[in-house]
Image (cartoon, rainbow, N blue to C red; front, side):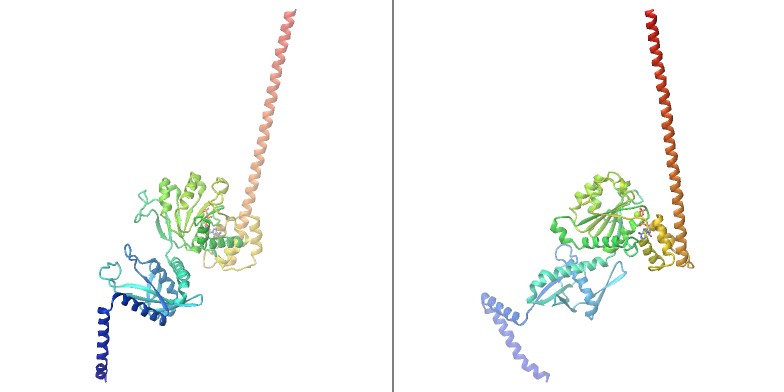
Length: 484
Ligand SMILES: Nc1ncnc2c1ncn2[C@@H]1O[C@H](COP(=O)(O)OP(=O)(O)OP(=O)(O)O)[C@@H](O)[C@H]1O
Ligand SMILES: [Mg+2]
């Protein structure tokens, strides 16, 4: 059977090869161009799809992984795990979690605005001249296949959507860092690979859920952050750098630092903790600011204690617009009243947030987080009254609510808080009385001083009247003498 088949196929193959050689050798070049165009048209007629190829490695520069390829890979990872049969696992976040992507020669389908597109992962041997830092002989790529009628949809909007989504997933998955510019042991900066910041993994547990503050104010801040992070086009349209400044102020222990951590966790941003006292001069500050990356919060704490802040802020204003990428700058202070008004004008610090003593609403958040007590408890009315009558920071409330041993239940902790609040109220009362007494004593002293002064003036006046009288008398006497 097989032999028969070959016997029949042989002459056919020979005929095809003969025709192909004739075509190549004897057809004029222009004619071949025409034939090619017509065959392309024919193929297009029966094959209504288009392809776009995205190679893994950049051909320019150092053969880095293409940003577009990485974004597509991340974007596809969400469909890969459900659609592809063979998956590749890459570790991210320093090995703490895995990203699953489709293996070579797999295909997955995506849908955008009701239209279907197909992504195929593939590879082909690299050209011999290529020197690659990655696996030799492989040139990986994604092929996007779509219907010709969707050409505009894909090129104008779908691709942008894929790249933005992929980038957003990468940002969410990356290991975030807390950077500081503190001086190292040797007294100088630790330049790590030419960088001026030293970074550690940022894993602060504070979130907007754990943050105790008035729920309306909290929502307002969340909305503000959300709007900011999605306003790239808006900022570009109005010609402003994509930055936002916050001023957080309030007494120690009211949650300023906790809020910064919550903001960073919410936006998935890195944090740059800028210690101004370690910065030598403007040149160094410029280098530090330029060395920060996008999607970050630059934090300057306790600004009241730092020198020449107006100069600093003018300087930051100037630099600000020059560095791209979204950045928040957050200043904190315990003494807002000490700040120069020019320093806190809107535009430099767009939003002023006061963090204050614990109110009942904030207390409920803490009771929920620390003791799992939700909404109501027999002790709540008393605590509400005490909180209205006295000032206690969320830090102190939290300390009292935290169970100190496994035997301490919610009742015990809430009772401890009541005692602490009563003590604080008593102390505040004594302090107020003390202050009242001190004020009264001060007033009394002032009164006494004033009386004494009055007496002294009166005596002096009396004396001077006497001496004038004496002089007058003398003149009179003299006059009398002379007259007499
Ligand atoms: N509003 C709050 N919500 C939840 N926890 C809070 C809050 N305020 C303070 N705490 C608790 O108190 C601790 C200290 O608070 P935090 O460091 O945020 O205060 P701060 O306002 O930055 O103080 P400072 O002015 O001294 O820097 C936090 O670790 C947290 O446990
Ligand atoms: Mg703080």
